[in-house]
Image 1 (spheres, rainbow, N blue to C red):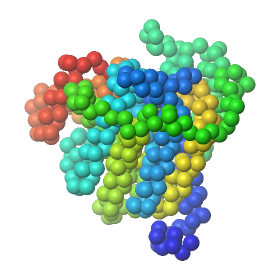
Image 2: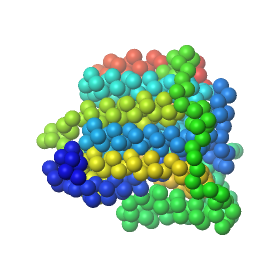
Image 3: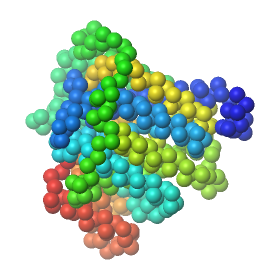
Image 4: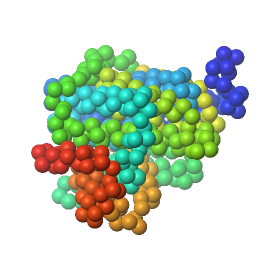
Length: 446
């Protein structure tokens, strides 16, 4: 116990093992929904257990859950040991749906997607090691950075409405069948999550998923598996591990996708690390986190390791703030989060029985969380607000994260140039505009 006290500096940080355990459990409860959402994001919604990608590789939901839990657990433990910070990591919500759609549509194979994820991770590692984080921050305008998360939030909410049947999107936008048991369950789940959140209950999303799943059993929407635990299938997991194909991804479309994945992860990590650290009172007088390069390096390495295991971009979760609110101040809480993720691996059958009626409301609510940043967009200057508006509208109504972000950045550059505000645009943005234009010329929007 003394070694734990000394290594994590518990007394120095005003905490103890019990507090760190409670904080870790709280963080895990608030972000465990990723294990439920990730397989549907990659394989697709509905009762399907697997898909075959463009290269004939079988991708099962079981394998996605196992590798997601494994990578989340291991990299979160690394965060605790190396950075000694109460930050937990897992596959990011947003990039997983973007890449999952590519795989499901047959536009890209899993091997191509994982190659793109690995490259973005390696770039992130390089930039983190070289310490040129500030250059990237200055390059992208504040409104554009905010709009990226907001645009993805609207897209995720759209997927929630679509998967549950609350909304229909076949012949235009319409209302779903509210007499359908699955739609009723989904509405119930959304209400439960909202009410629990209003009462500030930790893990509201997870509780909503569980309660909705329980309701769906007597309604015949899902069934209880014969076995609640299982030994992971090495064949299914082997299909998605170390699966890379680099030769076909360096196109205009591939570059745009890598740009979105990298910057989404970069700014998500930056905002989360600073936001959670602020809650924990870890920032200095200038608002900086001493040793911030450590969580950045762990986050970047997590993406690289995740790509090797068939996981989409790994990022630091803002839900870590719930653990901080519970008293977590050191990496020991992260260790507990990581262990809980690893414990989930044998319970894959329980996760697989959760229906779209339960995951859909979670997606809608995650979308709600992500779009809250829209309040920080500066609408007083039209030339600053037009790009974010285009980004959000294109992403939502074209059903394409990639097209939305590309269009938003181009709109920002064009309106600044047209109003002779050349100096407002960082030189790198002009260079970035070239592949974005090529993306629209030579590729169909995603």
